[in-house]
Image (cartoon, rainbow, N blue to C red; front, side, top):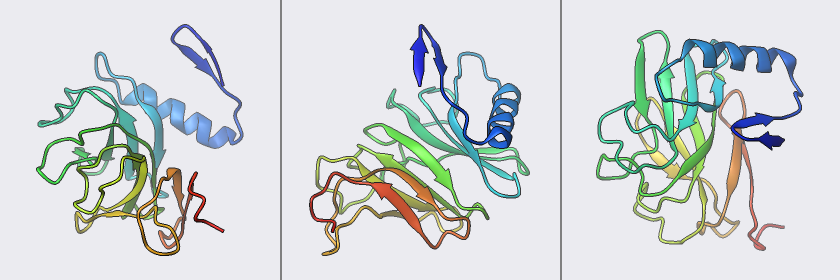
Length: 171
C-alpha cells in the first residue's frame, strides 16, 4: 500500500470484502478508535480485529496492538490476546483471521506471555478456541519446536492454517 500522512491506500483484490470492511468500520465507531483489518465469520456473527485502543475492555493495559473478537449477536467484545495472568499480552498482537464458523481465531504476536511454553523471542502464530478459551502456539517446525511465524490465515472449517515463517527448518 501507499501511505500519505494518516491515510493508507492499497489495492483491492476482493470488492465485496472491501465493501463489507468499510461498512463495518463505519458502524463500529468509538471516539479515538481505529480498527485495523477487521475480518468476519461466514455468517457475520463474529468480527475479529486488531486495535491499539486501551479503553475497549478492562485489563487492557499494554498500550500495544491487541486482537479482539466482537460477537454481533450478543453485543460482546472480548480481548483475545490475553496473557496467562488474565491481562493483555505483554507485546503486540496482530493480523487476526477467523474460521468460517467463528470457533477459531488465529493471529501473530511478539508477546511471550500468551502460553507457558513460548520461551523464544520471535513473533509466533497462535490459535484461540472461542468455545474453550484454549490458546495454542501453531507456528512449529516439523520437529514440534516453536518457531517464528506471522500473517496467519485459517480455512473456513478451521482444519487448516497457513502462515509465513523465516525459519530455515521448513522444507
